[in-house]
Length: 256
Ligand code: PEP
Image (cartoon, rainbow, N blue to C red; front, side):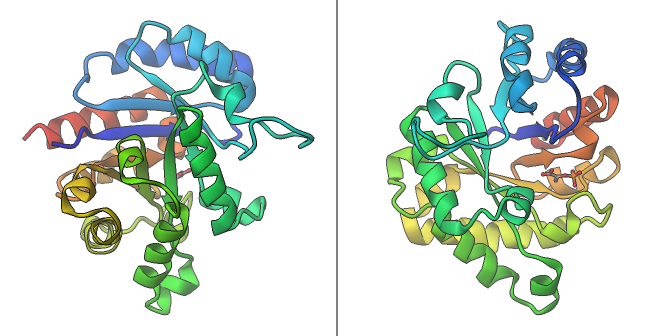
């Protein structure tokens, strides 16, 4: 049985003080839902303080990106060694990092391997653009991104990886993919690619989230799908009531 995982990506929102206050507000609200892995991903500068505010709680902290080298002359970057002790998870390959920071499949693969080498758990995002979706290329694009990101990752490390299917046309747009479409891509493309790379039993053990305009109103539709193991959430993770509701619905639907 895969544990459902809900990760809140706070993106470039919330100051240090706002992040800490929000983490303190969220912690008791999310506490009852221990059947769900609950993760918050604040900005780098809030990581230490949020990790501190959540100490002893079961809510995990994730970073929003990471560099691939342990240290070096890489102005503005954050090394995996620097995240150790602050974050358990790290987002890699988010479409906003691919688009605005020119992150390529090759770079993402280096980041995934570096994160694993330093004991961080990557949440690897993949997804097609609107043009690719309309051209019927979703499966080819997403399958290729999964293969590229996992290039050189051995089977033993797959226990430490989460994948997230995030169609770019659905992120922050209010236009979400239907539960059935998302389930088809996650099961028929992403998990099928994992079967090809690692075999059925490992493929069946990897958590795969959906992300893209997830909100309380559409959450049950996703969580009732057999191949969707949770959600990577932007906008709706920024408010305590909506984020808590997403976690509650995940616990309810996956507990059925
Ligand atoms: C995201 O940032 O990964 C995301 C899915 O954003 P939103 O939920 O706002 O679409």
